[in-house]
Image (cartoon, rainbow, N blue to C red; front, top):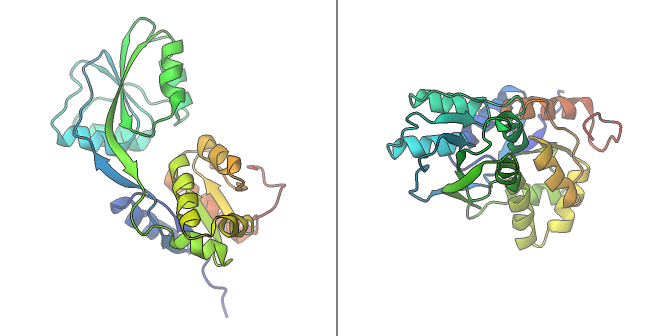
Length: 255
């Protein structure tokens, strides 16, 4: 008799991304627990005009495009391939994609270009201070526009209950906010301590170093941080770690 498929919690936004994530995990032989920890609430704002415009998510691109915004002659920077692909699908030219798909990577890619320039950063209300502070340190005048707010969907938290009961094999966190919302959902159920303990016996994956740092700051051990900060790489790494029995193994190279 074959072993049951590993149960993997995934926390993508409550739209097609959670469906796509679940389908990917199924294709990798996992049993996905689709527990959206993010909901998108558009503000109606669009990026302000500036010589440099920085976009940090596919969602932001799609909202700006839907509102009819165009970059014009601006130098357009995208945080990673998914954001860049969405921008190109909107008909825009993407000039800069950092080697490291993080706020720190964007700062590194733009440093040396933006001294004395105006830079528009268009993103969610939970953007990292690393980006804005780093650009200002590089000599830029930075304006930030909030394109959308990220909230926790009502009813989220099935994964916290499973973790607390020891019924979760893995969890794939895709942002610092998914970690925070997972813990908030557990707290509301009176399960925070038990849920964190349950994750100790599971494989915990974080999409990048900032997400991993947030998890560890809240007492969650992180087993997997993929080299590429995208969900496909995270999913593959997490399922591989479950199959390899890496949960709780302090010798894991990503710990």
